[in-house]
Length: 133
Image (cartoon, helix red, strand yellow):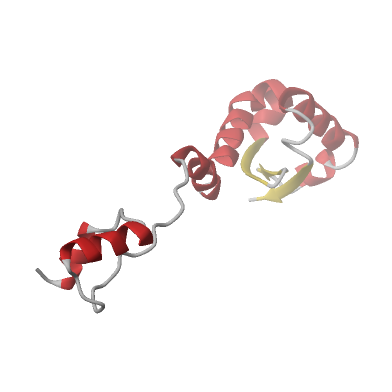
C-alpha cells in the first residue's frame, strides 16, 4: 500500500483516533497521519456569492427595464431610445440621434428616472447615462 492510499483511507480520523490506530496496528513513528479536515460549510452559504459573481441580478434587472421601457418612456421616445446597460444603479440609454441629448437632459431625464424608480424601486436605477450611437 503506498502513502497516498494510506492518507486517503484515514482522512476522516482525528489525531487522537490516529494515535489509537497506530498503537493498535503497530504502525511505527514514521507513519503519515491524516490531513486535518477542512471546516465544512453548507452549500447554501456558497451559492449566493457564486451567483453574485456572475452578475445575473443586473442582467435580469436590465431585461425587466427593457421589457417595461415602452410603458415608461412612451411610444415616441421608445422608438428612439433603448436601455442597453445597467451597472451599479446606472442605466445607460442608447439614443438614435444626437439631438435627443438636448431633449432628454433636464426635466425629461428626471421624469424618466422618477418613473423608473417608482416602478423598480429607488435603488434599482439611481442615475441615467445617455449614449449616442
